[in-house]
Image 1 (spheres, rainbow, N blue to C red):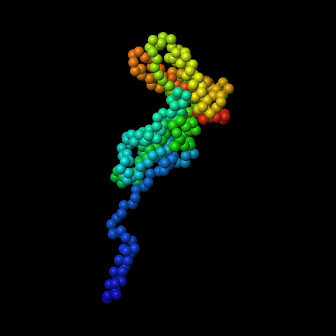
Image 2 (cartoon, rainbow, N blue to C red):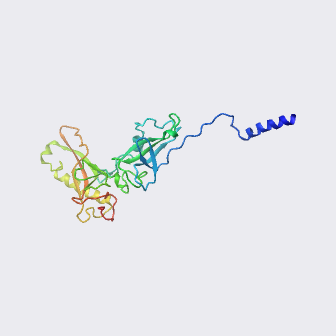
Image 3 (cartoon, helix red, strand yellow):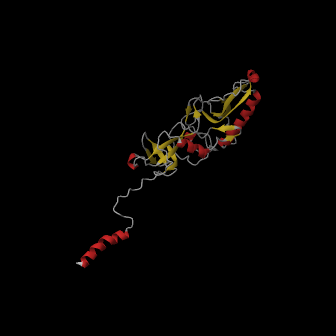
Length: 278
């Protein structure tokens, strides 16, 4: 009898000793981890689906929070992604006196699908995408705010009026490269040209716009033999506000205009490649 009881105790205690911490209570499985930074996503109304970055997609993950991170945003209207983007990109880049407009982005907060949540416990992630939410191929996460080797969908293009923005992967005739603004004495307003600028300032900005186009297109001839025209035009953005009644505010854009030639991709970073007209 004693031998039988000893065998029973051994059958119960030995496995328990080999599995310390297993006291018979249920242990919750860890919640799934967020997608890796750089994962490309197709965004639906309520769910985000990972896809190969060579396929058309809506954006890329650039920041994540684990399900147990107390800092994670839980409200879909949270501005956390906007704040994270601003912190990672810093001040708008400047070149030749122009504020660059070649890499235009927006963000979206995504959370774990419902089958991967436990109450409010769910991973969260921020997705970087083009400002107009158009789909694109390739990657943009990790590029600086002045990057020229970004997908064309992040460019700022139009067909005719810059007030109707298009992704640069749509057919277009104008691409905006930068914007500049300032003030002038109101007394000089009577002698301003078509751009709202005096002739000397207009000439200086036109020269710097040509230099900007050369640097951003990576070409010694940003006109491409006369087929493109770097030009200064009245700004399509919100005009600068004059700080004084004695001053007149001005705001202009530096653009590359292809006239009647329709382009199908950005000329930024084009280098010696042929103009995208196909």
